[in-house]
Amino acid sequence: QVQLAESGGGLVQAGGSLRLSCKASGIIVGINLMAWYRQAPGKQRELVATITRDGNTNYGDPVKGRFTISRENAKNTVYLQMDSLKPEDTAVYYCNTVLILSRREYWGQGTQVTVSS
Image 1: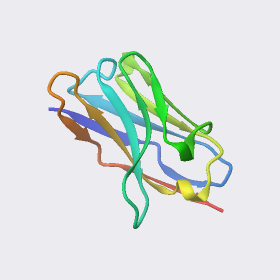
Image 2: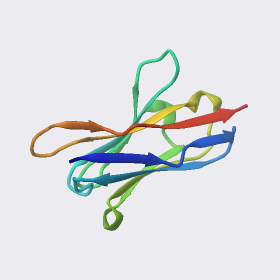
Image 3: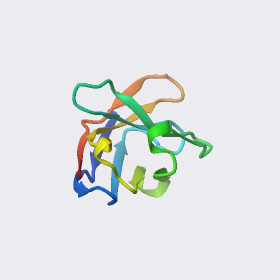
């Protein structure tokens, strides 16, 4: 059974940093597409960052230059380092994967990030 467990969210002042973690079970993060999405109140869910099996990364325009996605294969965990946080980064952040073989998609429960001005 595939499970994605996010952690690391919280309340931070503008300009601060947070690191989110996504611990995966039932899959191998090193061979599947892993991603972070976010959803702010009243808005659609949007892509934050992706990392492929080859380690290639991609970022949504609002977070380019401030956020970094990475993974630690030994811990089967994906991270999202968020620096220079802004109030508009306030959202629930979700871990996501699309399995390489079945193309099935899975989501975590989400973790709340709140950035105060």
